[in-house]
Length: 561
Image 1: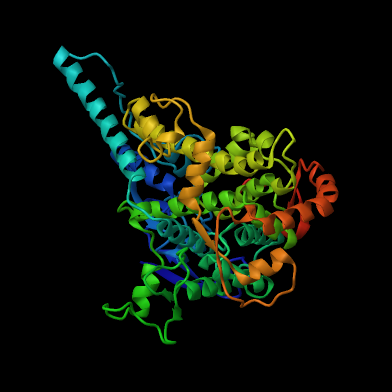
Image 2: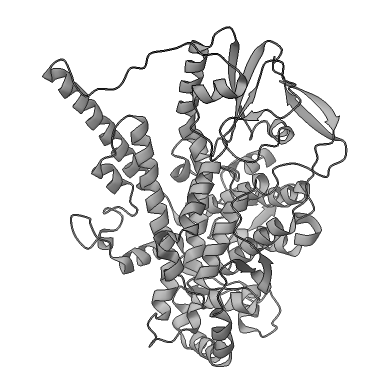
């Protein structure tokens, strides 16, 4: 429980209501972890936080110390009051400290490791001396050694089997698109505005607009999240989206309240009748009508393929699905040309920068964000050499980098990044169990597995990937086999001024290879190649061009703080 008070929170809102923690700081030292259930590092940090808490309580001399943890998803108002902008944040309140003031950060990035000594030094706690017991690998007899080895082997096997089971969790392409849409909605509601009442500054607004533009041109034409949510956000961007959290959340939740017959919000199989609650919504035949609350709840949660019965895993899983979808779509010639005609930059390099900037500003897991930025800004997985600055559809087949290679390199780069992060997380998990990650665990962390794609490996020992086969697998996994056309998309693509609403046709993913698309692409290449080539070769070492060719200087910011 907390107490409320109308104050100026310093974010532009007049007489905002602040909700303070109801903690006794008169006689006790209070330490509070602010976390988000979906944050991967928060889940990993839990064990460390509990261990340090037990040590401080055990060793504290003459001072009572209490440790708490509060979910910023459940108690958003409290986290806004204390201006929490990243997770996990551990804050200390010394004895006699005013609880209505922001406490002292105990785990800021760049500081020493979170420890009992650090807490004691920051908050004036005296700790009793405690002799340390060091781990030794010497055992009293051979049976102790065997027991130790068996325990380590069991932990490794369980971790390996768990990761493999996650990869093989039954899922459909609709699961992946629903999870992607759910994570996009969640990020918009929780990551764009961390404090109610604030407005977006120009930098954050441009990054958000750039990402929405990317979803517009690089996702399937008739994906619900694109034709519904993203289109409305782009159309009302200046009026509602950047003016405050309330307008943005209202738009997102209206779309999540959609009822789609036989499906969930974000499904890719969109040839269904859509209803709004209260306006004639119906239930599938043979099923009881769903209430507004039932529908909203179903459209706000991720499928089992993402959560694995742990809700906190859903957000990052769905976000990866979204990024993979966008990198596949960005390689499609007709999507590149639609994007170009819409006024966007559509090179692989720009897509990589767009994803990087979205994570920098709108992904509040501190450690996760900084690990990704450190990788990207240091040319991780050679993206600075692999991702070209030219729209792949305008390359010639006789160039060193062919259009086919250039179009798939972005998706392969992100796939490598994702696999590397999986291995790092498994290594960190093993270290918390005082063991070294096994080769079997590392292999289990790789996607796709041999069972999912035996053609993706060049050898039975699974030591070398077949990149062409991997790309084909990713395309089948993340992109619909038949992309349903959207009239507005085609109107822009053909640049013929046709009115939206003509009958939809189904196209295969190789539709651009048919004669009509060839004529369009060749014509565009001849008329635009010289100009685009010249513009795309301009180097941009310290700036980034945004959608509709807008620029902002010094874009290599490190996060939202």
